[in-house]
Image 1: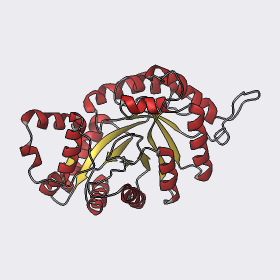
Image 2 (image 1 turned 180 degrees about the vertical axis):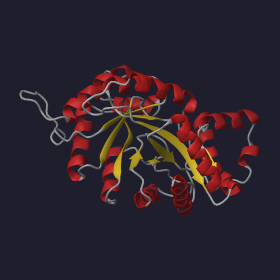
Image 3 (image 1 turned 90 degrees about the horizontal axis):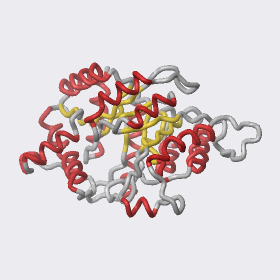
Image 4 (image 1 turned 90 degrees about the vertical axis):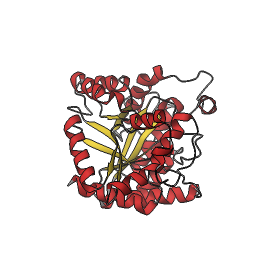
Length: 323
């Protein structure tokens, strides 16, 4: 499960955080392997900006599920700070913390400058160096090592590379790291990225063979019609992203897709190209087809349903469809 901790229209940040805890507990009960939280900034409808804090909060409210970042946007942070934060989490919750890393800022230019690490803005070109520095900081400290992350050193927190293009696929393969593709919002290069990752993968101390997660928007309901109605909250969110009009998560609207232009419908469909929306049979068939097409080791589900209880029901129906 990937959670952006949506703030709902008419709701509060505190309520969004409470819903995230409930959702994580439900995911754990349903047998989900991990629960990740995404770093975004200066967005009125997303409450997961302090990602490491929230990872700790969710881990503390659950028992066994792995909790992590999907991801920490590394250009915003010094590797030492990330190592110390996730090293602390690993000491508090041994064997349960994941560190997913992205190379985009996860925000707009003004906010990126407000997050600046120093006078020279970090760029995406610095990403490979920063990833390798993080690997060193989370590995056992070496004799004479000038900077040691305390906590952090020796925790070997699993690092995942995240991406929506080919760059991170190539880097994950080169470093021998697990890889997660953000096809829940950028599906266009999914198959090409997976092919590059698997074909060029180099075994490492962290990973012997390729391991890939595929992001999937999923909304399940008892019927296809109800699922499409609930999905109109997602359609509104996507249209807001595409038009630069980001808002809080909106309640569903009957016939929403018929109310927008043909061009907007096409853009929403392109954004959600791997999305699976429907009743139990539709969801089961969609998941099976996507599993066959991608050979993914895991799916990372995103489910933007306005009603928190119906979101939990969606996860339950999806879990049943996976059996």
